[in-house]
Amino acid sequence: MWMSANIGSQSLQATIEQTIIKCKDDLKRLLLLFLYSDLRLSSHLELLEDYIDQTNSRVAIEMMYIKLRHMMVTHDAKRIPASLITAFKKAFDKRQKLSNDYSSGSMVKSFNVAMKQAQVDHLVHQSGE
Image (cartoon, rainbow, N blue to C red):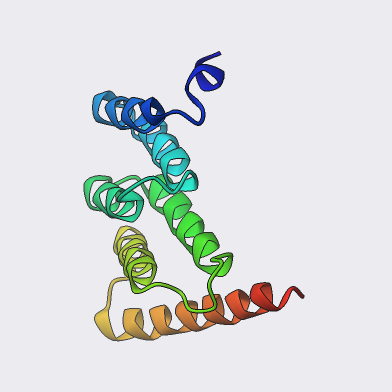
């Protein structure tokens, strides 16, 4: 009922934003941010990055990492936007930090490997294979 009353309307963005602000449950807030992001509402990547900074939940960060990687792989344009890469790197770094695998040399190498694989997967997705 809530979705049918708000979907496609200008009030949907405001409703989701207000709910995100009021929400104290980390997982519910994450799911609201995913909805906001899926709708490609304004500043969705910035809100995802803010969430990455605020949470210390390993599960939430893992879900965010997977979400951002999926967004990169399935991005419509041939070139992945820098803002999306920045958000992905932030999630990657936080994921490494929370998993106690935070030596800077290995982290840079690990990120480069993860990024290269995401780019390859993106190109495969773009080619329709």
